[in-house]
Image (tube, rainbow, N blue to C red; front, top):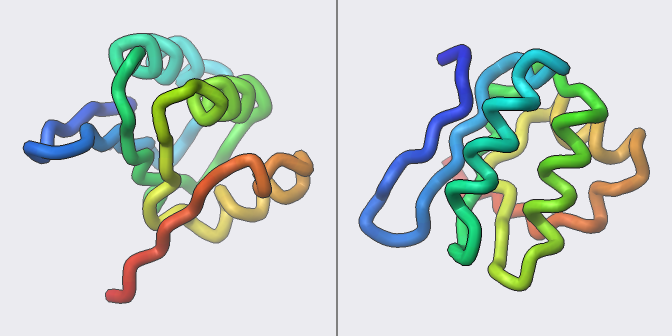
Length: 98
């Protein structure tokens, strides 16, 4: 998958992140975040291999809304990028056992 997708699971919607979240992916991520306005959501970051600062800003804004947002299965690269930016502690992270 090369684009951000919102998957309806019958419960909280899941925002599925693509492998590459660079500057060119920021518009799609922002549009998806706007679609989730007023709704709790999960953000599946398992596929992320490259992550840019504009996308980090969008995820940070999504995580600071009153509605809960949880990072689900974040990849090592996503965890590392958020840690290097000093914002990892701003997110609730859930890693389910496989």
